[in-house]
Length: 369
Image (cartoon, rainbow, N blue to C red; front, side):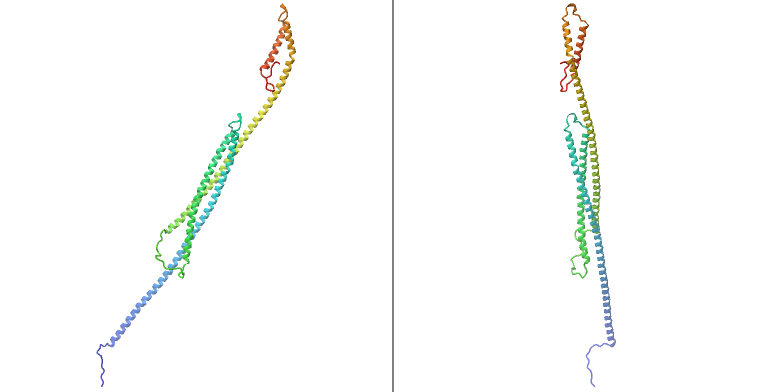
């Protein structure tokens, strides 16, 4: 009978083998369970990160879209305000030009008034008087000077306000240009997707760039620009109203003073015409009186010549009666009457001579030829 040789080794029982197999199975199952848990956790993490990424990307797009809308709104506000500023600048420029034209229109009346005063200095004699016309002309010069100062002040104010409006308009333009550029950048960012070829990783993308502002500062800056522009426009409207009122007042003052000067001139001209007519009447009446007087003088001269023969007769009779001799040289009624007539004639002609009555040529009329 043959015998089997066997190596000396440890032998396991069937129960040990079964136990070992079960242990291996248990370890494998445990590892599978752990792996399953890891896989589930990984899937959960993937889902969560995917959802969070999608939501974050959506939220970023929404915020970016809202930011774009906000920038667009402020851009439209700035653009509308800039257009209003442009319209106000055009209106103020037109008002300034009208005021300059009104100022230029005062030059000719001032020259006319000065020429009138110069011409009136050429009056001679007693006609060089300080009459109401001269006073009104001098007042018109003062009114025109005051009107020119007022209009020039309005022009200066309008020019200064135009400079301030231009400064506000420039600030609006800069802000508007920044808004346009920022809008282009945000629109470009909004158009990017995960499939865009130009996307890449950047170094330190969350850094805060120097010179950046907060949303409150950003909004306050644009609000300040618009508020300042509106304040300057309000001031410009007030200046335009003041310019219009000043032009109307100046026009009324100049027109009123012109009417006052014309009234004074008409009144003075009327008085001068009255005085001229009075002088003409006086001259005519005096000339007529001179003519009548010359006629009477000629009549007196004729009468005087006619009295020469009787006077010679009286002289001869009185001279001849002096030759009476002795007691016959008597102062009788004949001699006294003749002497009385002679004395009366001499007194009459002496009175006319002493009055210094003038002839037509200006020579005094003698009483006796």
